[in-house]
Image 1 (spheres, each protein chain N blue to C red):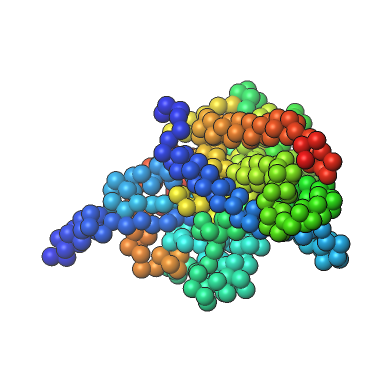
Image 2 (cartoon, helix red, strand yellow):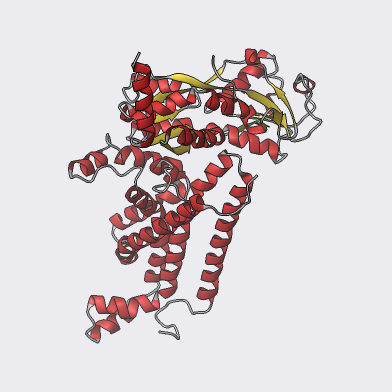
Length: 235
Length: 249
């Protein structure tokens, strides 16, 4: 039994996981923020349909989502044929493919906290900003973002941590390729399959500590401030 | 007469100048032996094998949807055959690289006797096996129970695992007193790693042939051919046996 320590293979997987989670989080905020804003404000039937669609990954088994993405984005799938015809190639088994899959899979974890904090914001603050001649972007950056900071923070922590912990989708979509799609959770799976249980425990323990600490930090941070609302003392 | 010389030169050349990467999809149960074989392969040929592990069913779905693998080491014989028929693998490259051995295992060092009589005595609450519909070892376990005429009697006590890995975990954690696992999970270098076990004779179930095949994108890939040749070598066969598999003659 060799000395038990985190080797270059593991660092490769850890680095890849951090990169995936960071890139995914950026994409999640770019897509999720306007989406959550719309869902929080709109009363149309379309909004409830979209809201339900966003929540689907919470219910669907990851391997099922992974399988459909594999087929849909693969060379025979409609989306795969489209990406191939415009010269992008196909997404499965690539880092970009993992970003797409992780974005879909983590979307509810970003949209839902944002949506509820936007909904709690109410109209008065926005109207006040408008009477002071703040433009929409100005209002968003200087009124909405500061008031909804706990929502943004929850979304960031949950989105990031959930991407780090994802297994089923990335195993199916990514193909477990070292250095490209072999993220930490899959590295753990490989160690288990190779009967390297001590090593698997080491990596899994690290992942557990990371998840716990990030959630705990979120709790502390959010407890320290009043909930975002129109009449909050910090408004 | 010159041919062997030429061949020797070519192989040396291929080992140094033309060293290449080969992407290999490997059935999860073969993870440990394949890691060691890949290291030997790299030393012997200079080529590097990049290994991706997964269940055979997943790998099959991935290959059909464009996965960048050149060789597949499956956990069964059907999957490589199906891939050849569907045009995703190269005809004539299939062969049995390992034969899986089924074992009845307990974490308790005294529970299982050399003949597996414990199954008939029925002195246990839970017997784990992999899902016969999903895993070849599960099917072999089911066939073994049928062959022994015990399937009905034990019906209420069977716990079905999603894979042979999970079946191992059920037993290792003590949640099931007994379980059917792969010998490769509990055997290293000629002995059991712990607990007690009965090596199920191959006659009680269909033989667990694990076949490999060169995939379409590996057809003209030299390192892919080198790897399949290496898997037939004595060194590789030695490793495969030491991990509790048999090899075909």
